[in-house]
Amino acid sequence: MITAALLAVLAALCNAVASVLQRRAALTVPQGPAAQAGLILTLVRKPVWLWGITALIGGFLFQAAALSRGAVALVQPVMVVELPFTMVILSMVFGIVLDRRTWLAIGALSAGLAIFLIAAAPDVGRWLPDAIGWIVATAVTAAVVAALVAVGVLARGALRPAALGVAAGIGFAFTATLIKRCTAIAEEDLSALPRSWQLYAMVLAGLCSLLLLQHALHSGPLVIAQPALTISDPIAGILYGGLLFGEPIRSGSWIVFEAIGIGSMAYGVIQLARSPIVQAQNTPLR
Image 1 (cartoon, rainbow, N blue to C red):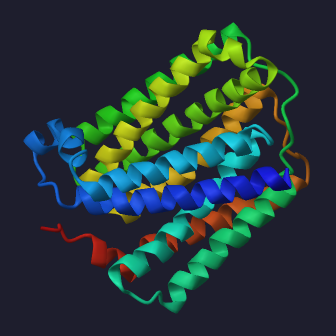
Image 2: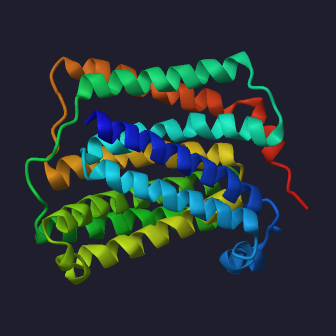
């Protein structure tokens, strides 16, 4: 489980690098319906965006390795450290010194994560999802993501990147469950992986989540899209892990400490969202 957690931290670092690079590329694309329609075709011609995709692939590989060794309910919450990593990298990219409040927020988020993981003690799953489980999970996920996308399309202001960020977070969490199943199939019989539907579902879910992420990053400040993505991913991951794989977390009096941990993480996210560093990356680049 320690190895899984360390691999998840490396995945979070790669994802943070990817978010900053992709956001920097997105800032060079004009706003408007025409730009949104051809967003990916425009971004793919930008080297900084391609480096961001390279970092994202690295994050995927580290995440797959983590999921092959640990529970979804462990790996996805650990990856919440992506947000502090993102703030530190933003400070380096834009040459801004992080203030005391930002460091306190990073500390609160990190401490909250540690408290939650110690209290919850997520463990490996007790069963594998059956066909009915996959059908229900897929249908519910598709419905929730579609509703969030509809909100993002119709909304204006901060609600748009927030809704799209949550949709992307849920999509990445669902992709993580498929990654975990694919790694298990590969470990049992590598030749069986190309014949499994989970492999192709994983690719489709990952690509759809990536597309949602690009539109979230393009539709508003990173500091709105990133927390929405970062918090929704682990919460959805815990639900998927528990319902699909039977991954247990502690209950009883431990719930109090789990709530404290979640509250500390939420406080850290809110304070990071108010960090002055966001002003440096909100101005469109030329």
